[in-house]
Image (cartoon, rainbow, N blue to C red):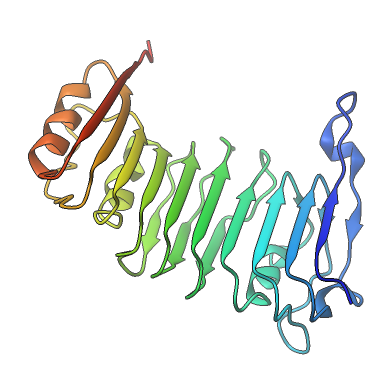
Length: 235
């Protein structure tokens, strides 16, 4: 019986991608007692589709700086985790698929970090109706598709390109504590959303358009109690 498994490989003297451990599916993805799985600086390959494979007890999954062999490796792994509550995926440059879906009805915490790459995702699909914490870092002009509102969301950190800001913000209007670190284009329309439960706001925006974004949040956040502002110099 394996109640918990954590796999971490690091070496400050070498680049992570040269320390790869190849994780294959044979027996590994059928462990019924696995509750926590952490993979770091590894290569994920030969992950089968869900037929015959399942991680029925897995509640925490952390994937950091992995190399994915096969276009469906990541999605197949996620599809095995039916009761996942905490998901963290931190990609490395040019080592992630162009389409990605996070569909978990029981998920409570979600962290996604995507560095800049030569291409953009076609789309993200996020369906997590009971999410309580969201951290989203994306340096690409990605299309975000949040399928449902998240009324239980308590805290969110959003650092995305201006192109994606509106599509993300519209899905987190029930948040109580919000940090936004994004540039806003001069003619960008991000208005029209009411944050009636927002109590603590941190804004980190570019100089030229900081007042526009600030004015919207002040107007649409009737319960705001704390405000922190920092200026991001993008010149």
